[in-house]
Amino acid sequence: MSSFFFRVDHDLLRSEAFKELGGSAIKVYLVIGLYSDFGTDWAYPSIRTIASQAGLSRQTVLVAIGELTTRGLLVTNKSKGRSTAYRIIRQAPERPTKGRVPAKDREKGAESFNPTGPFFLDGVTKTGSIFLEGPPSSGLKSLDQVARLLGQAGREAGPKQEPELIEDSSSIPIPGTPFRVSAEGRLLVAVDLQELLTDQGIPRRLAQRIATQKDPEAVAKVLLNAFYLESQGKLQNGPGYIRAGIEGGYDLLPQVADRLEGRRRELEARLRSSAADETRKREERAHVEEEEAMNMVIASLGVEELKALVRRAVESLPEPLIRRNPTLSNPFVRGRVYALACGEPLN
Amino acid sequence: MPAAKPIQTDWVKTVLFDRGYLARIRGEAIKVYLVMLEASGGQPDQSVTLSLSQLMKRTHLSCPTVIDSLTRLEVLGLVVSTTRPRGKVKTYYVSDPPATADLHA
Image (cartoon, rainbow over all chains, first blue to last red; front, side, top):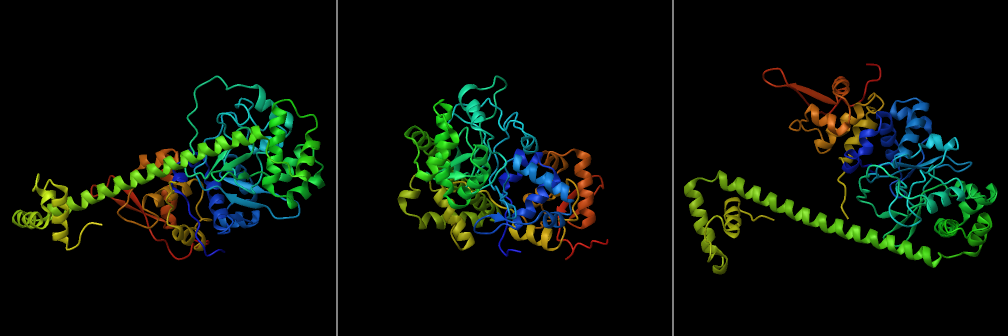
């Protein structure tokens, strides 16, 4: 077992996903997190191991994994001939899309996405938390499905949904696709590429070869191009284009690249703003704590002692600082009284 | 970028896994335990108590479920209950359980 730590983020514990998860799913989450490799975050415990550690049956573990995947807390990678890999999504997941179909129903052939999302690369959609080299279960079944999702439906009429919450996220989803883009402009892939390629009509063996030998980001670029062209009704032969694109190393189409850049800038702005908010909050908290510490010390002093300390503080401070207000209500005087009383200044 | 603060990592690993308590915690009790652990900063702290309503709100569980979970956790020794002077209000805090979860108990 890894000697490194596995953390459970506070944001996760306070998220809606945590409230809606069953106890079994949480236990499976913890077990997989424990087995996660410190560097790569991937874990490879068998179902039997998870069941044993969590005190659950095998079937319950499988159901729990499905639930975690649906809620965007877990990503799985099933490659033929290899053990299943799991990756915990640590940040607070976005709220599940209204009408989103659970993973088990997707396997039965139901539509993967509620086709009420916005146009390709525009607006906001909930594609779930996705990371590089990730796996599965939210793969699109066909380009037709993507085109229906991308091109034709508008926003569903109904109650307004809460804005998407992305906290602590180093990447932002690309609407209408199973990919994300990072602040550095890297394309992040979190689906089983082999399955996705197979769903787009690529023969299974070729898809396997591509998934194992080609750079996932390069494959994602070609797929994004294919999705875009399909949404514009300009793609005649999807599998052919994808094969040629991967073999030829096609780069992003200018229109696709522009929109990705837009999303990347949006992410950058969000990250900057959250960093600034966090700094401001930290400073406010520090100020409040300082005030509390000073109040506590000052309250513990006797009247005469306090007067003496105030006198000493006023004498020791530079004149400009105490000229207008040489009393305890002056923050400089309060700080100096604290330092004199405690023998050390506030940090 | 805002960083989410974690629960004390070694407590989760040490108590729940290494000592085998995770397999002993049944049902929704794990949610109650994690919320209590979060409130106490990831370490056993007798001074930190949560009310039933707070637990219900954070875990989204019903009152009977939370009470049942607390009872189960108390049987395992993961939490300890204390009763206020008049004996009407029960509070719970996270405690340091025995070294191993005795599966035959």
